[in-house]
Image (cartoon, rainbow, N blue to C red; front, side, top):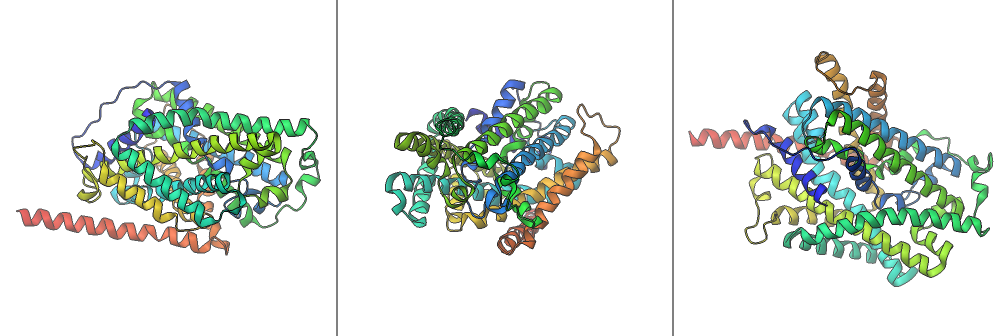
Length: 474
């Protein structure tokens, strides 16, 4: 959590490029091993326990077969690793913390950079964390009330979680710090326990080994390219934090070495863990069972060890979700507070409360945004925010190509082949367009893209209001 807090504050340094003369002074204390651990800890969360099926339509439902689903998970790991390496080129060339904001601002100016921060703070992060909160609510409801629960009971539990964690964040960060430290350890334990469940079921002879027999494992595979694009969406949701290290570049020891190696090792660890988790699912369940269950992790524990295994898996996952949401509220609220204090967002969103020494207003705003997103279906939310998220990723990959052309002689301690950046630009651009061809995701995608013109209007209003105030002061 200390790293996450500092990460959120380091994003403030990049926002302050709007203010002349500000030069952040940070200590380079994070080595390769620590960087890999940070990336692994930030990536591994609740997503791997929902994306195999839920929210509908999920990876295996869209892929149509066990073999196609596994291929998608493997390719997603490779894609996320390549994305991390491409970002490493930018991070070692522009050694400032802040990630996409810094790179987009350098290449294309303030408006695109503002749109990135606007969408991140008010759309991408709160919406994605509301999905995690829904996972918490669903598992909590099933654990307490069994299958008699309903979707609104789950959403109510998720809302209560957000409110409580928001209050903890207001009072201070010590509770959240402890919580995240415990959650970081438990989430690795949950992954290990899940894999052991798959092995146990397989050894006892109750597994579904037919999922690994070809050609059976590929029977029923979808022939619709849009289905595979949407399946990638849900896979990529679990890799959301693959760019974490670029938000703390100024704290990395010898970033020209730590950023690419730490990113590579961390993403390989995440990719292997996710692939093994999916092997475990396929060892224990048929494809139909995977598609139909809402609580696959809980079912995995029960299949291997009965009710005790179900409880252990559920509790571990609940703590993992709790840690993700609690840390997200802490980080996102500080990003909002920092941007508001630096003049990018309205002043009333910023400030530190004198009594609690925390950004109370920003915490309330971000917690409220998460609760609002709970009113929507999780299935609609993922393309809603992922479309905008991957649009900015595509823009960032274009920055790699743009700076190769504009600043060919600038020293780049680490470089990826040009064709890799071209492929990543095209692939991420496809992720933005592809959902438009799906009737189930088209509306969510269009609504997500509407945040761009809305953000432009906000930027224009802010610009003219600031200009008016300056002229009135003269």
